[in-house]
Length: 139
Length: 64
Image: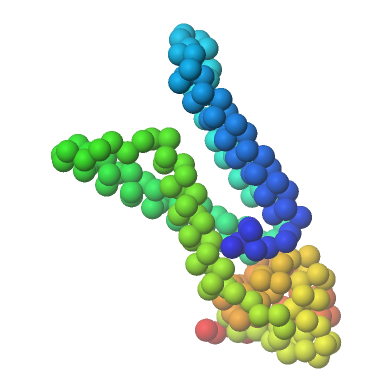
């Protein structure tokens, strides 16, 4: 994978930061889930709890931007940008297609909070493909 | 774009990792440039030329 397989200082910082935001996401999501299941919060408290996991997601997008500005290895930077573009394009294609299916057929609604994991799944697959295409032997 | 990177590197008995360390890039990047899968930017091409004490034209040759 472009970021995971490389060992540039920027990629190491990226993995650490991204991991932190994802850990925050899990904690905030679990907190919100627990609070809504057992305490049924309302008003501003409910909104704040619901927005918690989303803030972690927004922070992770900031981490991606930071990586792109810090990465000095132009090839790794290009691979990462390509993966992100594939992720954006295919996620838009998937959600739009799904939207039309939901509009005209009795298919279940796709949860919007799952769009971001879908995006990263596609980015991960693209990085795997890049890793295979640009695989380097130890010479 | 064709290049003579592998030859120049072999003349100095450098591994891809050695060259990557000198260029401050990943080994994957050196491999991609050597195999012609990636054409470096002008700054990186100048860095390569300086490292091998030659000109950019002596490293990179136009053509597929």
